Amino acid sequence: MKKIVPFLFLLFIFACQDSPSVAESDLHYLNGYWEISEVEFPDGSLKEYGLNSNIDFIQLEDGKGFRKKLQANLGGTYDTSNHDVEQLTVSPSNDIFIMSYDNEFSQWQEKLVHLDSFSFSVVNNEGVTYNYKRFEPIKIPQ
Image (spheres, rainbow, N blue to C red):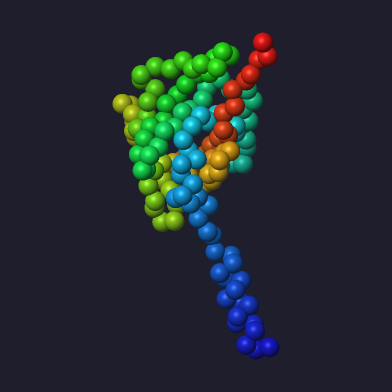
């Protein structure tokens, strides 16, 4: 019995360690159209977004790419301008991925805390969490 207790203790310690929630092999899921679903503030309050015509298009390859702001139209097209492009790099840092943005006005970083084929979440330097979901265009029957 005395030999089992240390083994169980070590097993418990290893089981409780945080594993990276985003794998490098999943970064390709960032490519595509995304809409913000909710924002969680450091005090725990939430701001939920319903129908949203403002979306983000992300294109990433080998850790480099861009994010572009778009406005969805009912006809399935998008409006944008050339001024809405943010250069994007995604790089590993201490078992997490950092998304670094750069545009003509500023530079900033966000920590990628969740990513799958349907959603992703980032946390900015102020501790605000932005949750995104895959954008699904509204289809109006004809």
